[in-house]
Amino acid sequence: MRADDDFDTFFRAEFPALVGFLCKIGTDVLEARDVAADAMLLTYESWSSIEHPRAWVRGVAGRLATERARFDAGPRPDWFPPAEPADDKLVALVAQHAEIIELLSVLPHQQRTVLAWLLDGFTPAETAQALKITPATVRSHRRHARERLRQRFPAARRTHDKR
Image 1 (tube, rainbow, N blue to C red):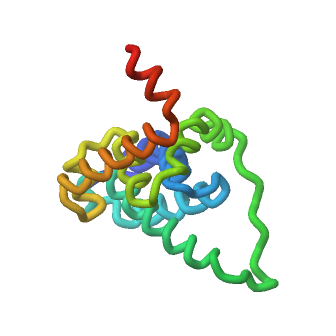
Image 2 (image 1 turned 90 degrees about the vertical axis):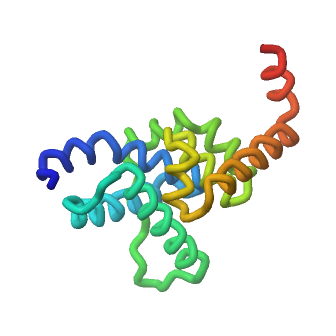
């Protein structure tokens, strides 16, 4: 069983990375911050039973972001509160990853999600388990994403091929 101190350490280390992960899968920084906070709360509530918290919190956050995107697609009621301004540190973090986020934005959702997991250091097997797909499907999405990026950005391909 993990102590609250362990969760606090986890939260401090992973919250900014989780916001970055959510931005990589297509969530804007303001929404990513809110989704990450909700996912961390759910993580805290289940902390003692979670074996792999980095993967668990990303899985929860990805599902929450998808649910919110569906909600946001509809009209907002007049009483719905306006978004709060983003934290400067989170905006700076997203700015550091702006090029990656921009590259990923041209990919279909599933390819983008798989690459976001892989960019966050998860193996194809871990990614497959978290997304409830096979490792072969993860590798296929990765391969198709790379090919799409090569087609979309041929100059980057020439630079990479020269190395």
